[in-house]
Amino acid sequence: MSKPYRRPLTVALTAALGMLVLAPIVHAGPQSQTMSKQEERARRRAELGKDPQKAAEAKPALYPNATRQSPEAKASPKLMKHLQELQARYEKDDWAGVISKAEELAAMPAANAYEKSFAYSMAGNAAANMDDQAKAGEFFAKAVDANGMENDGHFSTMYNLAIIQFGNEKYADSLKTTDRFLAESKSDKPEHLAFRAGVLANLDRHDEAAAIYKDLVAKNPDDKRLLMNAVAALQNGDKFDEANVLLESAYKRGMLTEKRELRALYIGYMNAQRWDDAKKVIDDGVAKGILQKDADLARDYQILAQNAYMDDKIPQAIELYKLAAPLAADGEAYLNLAKVLDYADRKAEAKAAAKQALEKGVKKPEEANRILAR
Image (cartoon, rainbow, N blue to C red; front, side):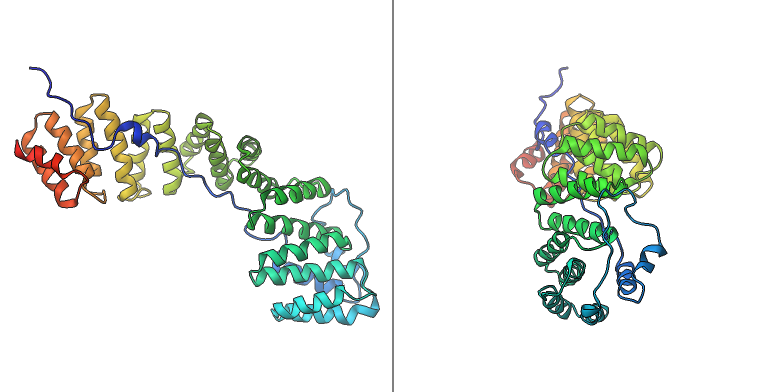
């Protein structure tokens, strides 16, 4: 007896494959500025005290290899009172007052390069705290241009400018500032290099971004954030096999502990048509409670089911559709299950699945009704 006509499933396999590309992971910049607010305040309080050099001696330089000759950070006695008033407003979180005083101070004819840089950097931080990122960028740029702060303050401000430009989606400007920062500060800190990679990724320069991330991952193999950004850059550059290698290595070391991380791996396997490997990862994720039984999992089960169906692995397709159908938001998975059961000549089960499909709702109820009418 020949096999019954194989009815097409509701969603074609080729169409489903178009959904398999992992959504890009956001290439975020650093979560904090180079110096914390507390450190920044402490440094500036010391600068405005009796011994400005004390702050520099208290802790190692942030940028010991900088090519820039650090100027002597000195405030003139004539404007010391104004600087201290500016600092006092900053201490009180009086951001509008900080900006007003900073602009007043920087406009004074007697203000030197250090005082202008100091004032503008304070104004930049105040504007950022007021969530006026455009104004913060303007002030940070002025602080850098004034070129009066010691290296720690100068390069921290330059880096903040790059972050602000990134946040304002001025990626070309951010890259230019970042490249200057790296060239002059000679920083090789992972967070600074990763930030540059993130900017490149947002400029769609994925190969360059991936190269930086891969190098950082090789040097920092336990840094999961670097790993996932490397994966995103590789995937966005259509280098899925390389992304899979990184993810597979991390998976074997137990690093993939979140839903999006496991999905990155098994969707990568799906793109590579490694269906059995994908299912193993899904099963492991469900067993460990990392993957929840939700609509996302339903969709992924359906993709695996469609592949099994097309490969004539009918029992496996039925099993997978049975897993997907109760989780799906509509009845399409039940309808596909009904079609596969009907193809396998399991008529009673096919009718039961068709009835459930209609109860949950499908785009083409007539297909379910045809199965019920047999």
